[in-house]
Length: 196
Image (cartoon, rainbow, N blue to C red; front, side, top):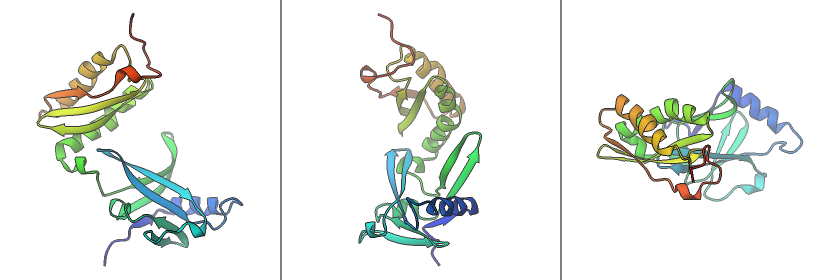
């Protein structure tokens, strides 16, 4: 028997049923779509929709009396996922535990780079409103894009070489270089303004 497209934890079921009891969303199904936000990350689009919003290409999934419309394009990217509702110090909200990975993360080195970026580098950059996204990994070279307070920051070269690159090289011997693909000239809110 094939595994279900989507399962829910008890906390997700309770939260969704609570939301569905409100006047605005009474009995409404939930539309779920998955998109590649970047080569290393999925973005989940989740919203209540009217019953008549169902499209011919949608897969309809019923979990504990909760109806989901999943667009055909998203089914293979979502298959086998579990939706949870978390309430922790780190944040509150719905979270997908998805066994599927974007194509880039099928490479074990790229997956390790992504893990270090998400678990160690981005939390540090977030203290200054910055973030970094993995775009590619080829032949020892890591291609990244900086955003938030890091985009256009006068200290970006220091952050890149002494922070991001040093951390990745230390953790992953296969990494030889980190290349920034960011358009820093289009920054709107850098943490540090470049000197004049």
